[in-house]
Length: 423
Ligand code: HEM
Image (cartoon, rainbow, N blue to C red; front, side, top):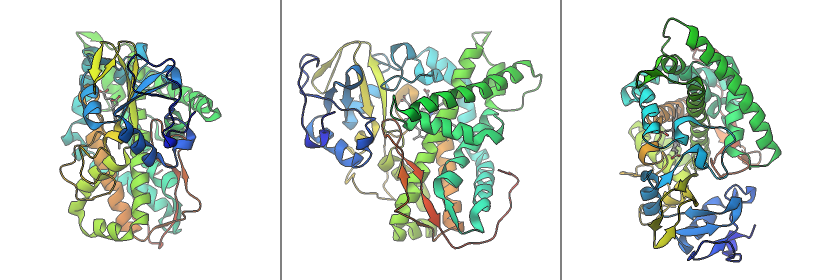
């Protein structure tokens, strides 16, 4: 690809009529992991819209205003799997109602909505603390751990799997499969491995659906709920249940790990802010929103234009694909004062990190609770953790998610607290 950091456009051949310039920008390019923020800033400063010739051609949308408008307009910008879904290129698996348009998407989302309400998230906090405590207990006496492998990856995986009803002993497979699916450059060997791992996860989900389709009692899990649910008096098709559970698992596992990892890494580099956060728990709420904004775990999601539309003076034609760059919208100086700086008390904070419109994240209340509780436990129990910056590793591609594979850390050892959960 051409180096977008030089701002060097490639030939306009193949670009839609009136496109300002055409670039061969591939958001999955591993080279973009270093300097990710700067690259996107340059793109946004050059234009709110670019036409990229990568992956068959797509519009890159960088401004807050355009991302806000397009994500909310499902009539014009479709998420349907048949149109390519919500990623560029399309995922090899269908992810339930996030890959559908209203009204079908809304009907399916409604089946789960009550289980993701703020009250449910509050009720669930004790379980989240128990699981975070258990994983910290595993490493606390040794004084060293990998903040990702031992904490940021397993805690969200176990909590999401418990919600769904999946057997928890498979947490590593479920965590790895979803991390790899969201972060491997399409076409890479890791991407091929992710497809195999996701197929193994699918077998777990199929067995779970089979069990609940025949069970007489409701055990309160999402699998149990969906196997009993009806739409217009008809039971939900098993293939659709599978897709919806795959969506919840994917939505809950990788994103939360990215947010926690990025925040822990940043706080290690800013010990004064870390101490402030520990000493002023009231800061946790705005800090959570600011970490969401600044690190934007889900960097970009795609849509397909299904009705001609003018955005930022540019005609987007039906059939063209668009990439809504949430990370770029979150750094738009028109929407956020001093966007390049983390302000732990920034408020209000109308970031785009949970998406917008009909597909806005269903798990946002759970995500916030899980993040705040796990971070609180780390700040309480390993307040002096230091990361070995020479041994850290980032995701291979930030095309869908940005985050860390490895953050090796040391800290002052202390005693286990005990937990009802055994990892
Ligand atoms: C930091 C954590 C999280 C972030 C940044 C995040 C981000 C997002 C984003 C950007 C979308 C919109 C996708 C689109 O517009 O195409 C989304 C949708 C969704 N998320 Fe999350 N998510 C997080 C945590 C969770 C958790 C914990 C769960 C469940 C346990 C979850 C479940 C879902 C579901 C089911 C959808 C689809 C909603 C729909 O299509 O109606 N997410 N998430």
